[in-house]
Length: 108
Image (tube, rainbow, N blue to C red; front, side, top):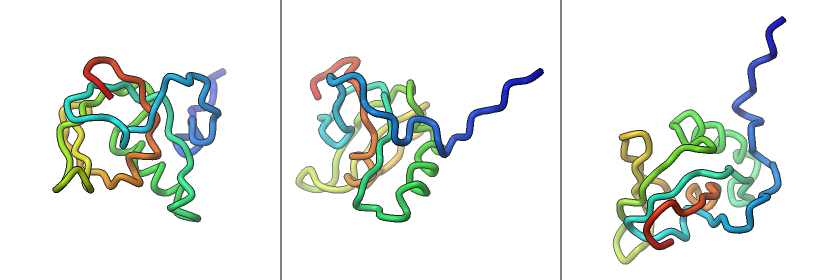
C-alpha cells in the first residue's frame, strides 16, 4: 500500500517554529547563504496568504532549500534578490518575511 503524497499547500505552512535561531529572509544581509526552515503565515496578505505560500513553494522556496541573498533595491528597499537552485528571483520584503531561514555562512 502506498502512502499518500504530501499536499504542498499544507506542508509547514503554519507549523510552529521550533528553532529559535531562525530569522526571516528579509532580515538577512547581502551575501548571506541560508537554508529555508519554514514558510509562515503573513497577515499582510490576508485571504491570499495561502496562495502566496503555494506560489513560493512552486518556485522552489521549500524547507531545506539553500539560497543566497544577492542584493536589494535602491537604498536597501524592495525588491530583495535571491538565488535558489541556480535561479535568481526578486521578492518583495513582505514575501521574504514569510520565509524563515537559518544562516549557513555570511552574516545575517
